[in-house]
Length: 199
Ligand SMILES: CC(C)(COP(=O)(O)OP(=O)(O)OC[C@H]1O[C@@H](n2cnc3c(N)ncnc32)[C@H](O)[C@@H]1OP(=O)(O)O)[C@@H](O)C(=O)NCCC(=O)NCCS
Image (cartoon, rainbow, N blue to C red; front, side, top):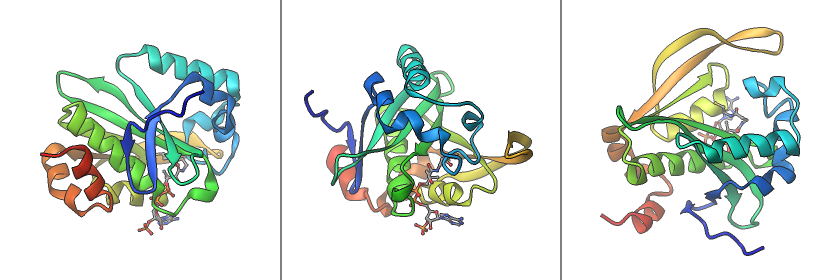
């Protein structure tokens, strides 16, 4: 197999299109790890290469969903998945989702870089006006990661997720185009973005 060309590059991670073959790798098991899926609805169901391959196929067949593999650039290891979902071409907004499945990479800035790359993709490539997300309120690492990428809180959904024998509130966060234009220069990947999207 030829090595895929990175689609978008950060400093520590890059993203490339997700392929059905990825399901046969570590990704097929990620949501079975209770710590990875602690706050995720998806964790309520067992996962294997077959179920994940079907999900990837469905998202590839959908014009509203675009999913990427997050790759650790130094090692070439597939460490996460991130994507844009529910593309609304009239109101020009979309949902962002991320899962860094390899727990040993958490806390090194990879999730933030991948989030920023998806925000860049939504605004610079897809010409969206707003990117939004939902996150369980007590998923503090995720909230911090999104704040570092410029997302702000816009509301709360009560008892939205049932996991670990209890309900959790969910925070809706979003970033608008002009907010992105304000914050992107402060990001650690700012130089990489300028290289890839010269004005
Ligand atoms: C959420 C997730 C994407 C973050 O990825 P990551 O690579 O660890 O993110 P980063 O290292 O870029 O940033 C995490 C930030 O949260 C902070 N953090 C982590 N755990 C925290 C906690 N319990 N309380 C407060 N801050 C926390 C880190 O210190 C870091 O902030 P800093 O750079 O200011 O120190 C990743 O943990 C993940 O995929 N988790 C499982 C699936 C999931 O929850 N997805 C999100 C669904 S909405």
